[in-house]
Image (cartoon, rainbow, N blue to C red):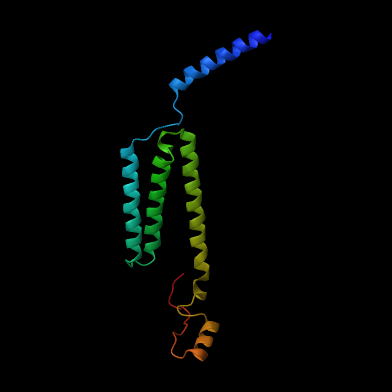
Length: 150
């Protein structure tokens, strides 16, 4: 291939690349502003709900409500802000798999806490309570939980 053949080839390649640039935008997908604003507003509302749930005492269910809201928020971010809705199905599969593994890990952690329930204290730790009694009489007394069913 001579020098002139190479420059002709480069010119053809440049014209070919220019024709593809017209067909393909610089980014993968342009999301309408309406969808982005709606998603942002939904995230703000869910954040307000998360903060409000903190002040409502529903026992141990509080953490599950907060985690559920966090999962919904993560799904909104991944779906619209990270463009998973318009991406390859394999990427959605990877995202769902990751979420499932995190849920599995959290479930194992929750199962593990039941083994330590009989060693939990309702007040201060005994050594801390001794120090408080010596330095601050009338401080709360640490009591070991005995009424919790495993």
